[in-house]
Image 1 (cartoon, each protein chain N blue to C red):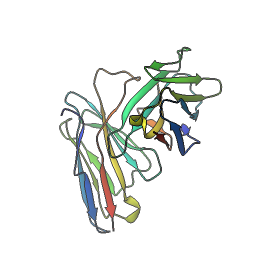
Image 2: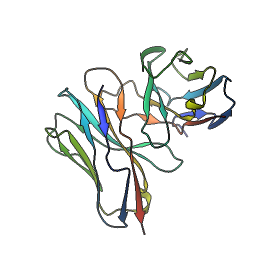
Image 3: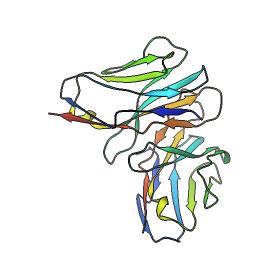
Length: 116
Length: 115
């Protein structure tokens, strides 16, 4: 399967703990997005990478959230000092280098975070 | 920021019938792209259909078509000959052609297909 993969698929943690999620985009896709999706809502944009550069960050991304894409391939999203309000599905999506503005995003299966 | 509104949290359709899902958006831009994505239960989100704002002709993909009304800022999805596999959450999304890389999503419509 050469689609976008995310790990882990599910994460249960206690409030105050740190968690890290990984996203592996489709090979050759240089654009990578992170979204958060809560129950009954659509995906909310968190951050965008082009290659290794983090070009856009949402105001939703508090200072407890940090994302990296060190070599322009896989990306990690870390949440420090988790809160119950962080419970959500975290989605990763990628787009190829050759796609213009009309290009679609290819989504991963998501990581479901539950903070107890 | 652009906003996308889907006013129908839930819809149902009889198998083989036609259903229309509505979407409206708010923008001051003239050049943008609109998308419908499908999210089946416990599965990945996939693109259903897209529309360029500069095109007057409505996009069509097999049983899926859109009714794009630029002046009204409306972008509805019509599913013809509905199939059981069409049951999913459907999200409408907006992307500017010129400013930023963000996609803005609506809150989704849950479609049930009744056999």
